[in-house]
Length: 124
Image (cartoon, rainbow, N blue to C red; front, side, top):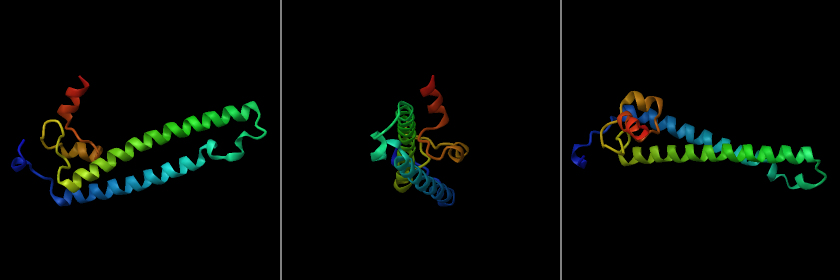
């Protein structure tokens, strides 16, 4: 689809989505910071006088923290990507086919970058 044929979403639709994404990004960043701080491996005294049970608990706590942090990092990337697409005027345009993504889909999943038809094709 040529640049001249692209239809952009009106600002009245984009503005609340942008605000929502910015709020979500702030929440995710705060959660990531708190999870990182709560990681048992951050405690320097963890190796002194630990029983085997404590070591196992710390290992499990660390693994749990790392999984959650990686998940949050992926979400943060998706939201930043959506905010960049808003800034560039490409928000709501499918990356695969260039058609507009349905507003209902964007309302449910505002960081999506492909339309439902392309998503179904990808899953097939």
